[in-house]
Image (cartoon, rainbow, N blue to C red; front, side, top):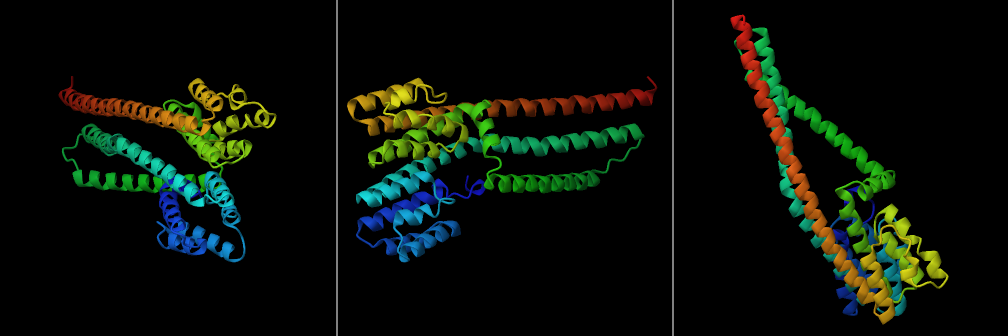
Length: 346
């Protein structure tokens, strides 16, 4: 997500790449292309990055050098493809491929958000209803134990509003600290370990990471990037430190002349199906197409894993709400009958 990292998100990069590809294909000079893309950029961060690149090019830098200077804000895959497209005279093609790649990611993110809306709404309702029910139960219990006959409902609402206000402040502080630490890179490895190894997040994380890796490697190989450089760039596109480190272990064998299938033999995260597709691609000379198919396969698997994860969350939410309701009802009647028994001297 864009708020947790300095890098531009797929949502920001998709229209930028599309606009740059269209303008460059029409023969518009690169300085004018960047100016137009910056004017249509979705937010101030994208405009600042494009403006900085435009100034660097105006001072004599190439587009690749200008993009390289924006490494904190631009993904490695974008930088590699732009550099190779400029060098090989295929910049419009590379930008078009990047635009489609980021548009696919945006569509997938929208699909996941759509699936997550209902469970998130349930959790929100469970929080507000549950906390109110527990506070109500506490007030009723205090009233019965005190022997009073007056229940201050207005006071309960005021206390509940103060409680939710304090909870909102704490939540905002926690989110602020998380965003700061995440943008500083402190949480990259701890959060990466949780996403990679804790179910039900791990199947989703691994599938999406491999989908991004295969798609990125396909784009880089198709653009003519050296295979070692392509591996490094595609591993970074996985956006997961553990999976990236695992995939980069294939670089030394490839540098020594080993085929990709052999280089990935010891990988913990690259599954057998993907290795077989890579082997077929290498043997047939259609590695780019095989990698693209592997990417589509992992995207489909990741979507299915996401649906499973959200269904599990839905069931757990229902069980949690049922537990809270049952606990409140039982406790409420226990307090009433206990108070009546005490009043009757039983």
